[in-house]
Image 1: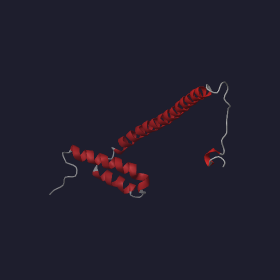
Image 2: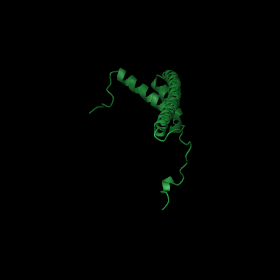
Image 3: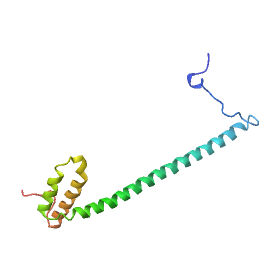
Length: 122
């Protein structure tokens, strides 16, 4: 009859040592220790990746804040139009971050003047 397909390539890595009735207890203990070690290793790898991502985002946050301060220098409508005309010469994939910052600053300036965003004349 033969072995089922999933049992044909069965390999015994280490034969049990000791009496037959004690072998499952030792094997179970080794299996648990191996699972704990593997879990700890995966946790450490995950934490290292998370730390790298957080550090990258924090550095990007500093650069974005500096960029926002530099773009705030374009405060008059004429300066904004000139900057937007310059940005229109480049594809949106390259300038989307600048456009988002400028839009947010324009909205904040409008709200600070007493306007309500999204509310026009009826």
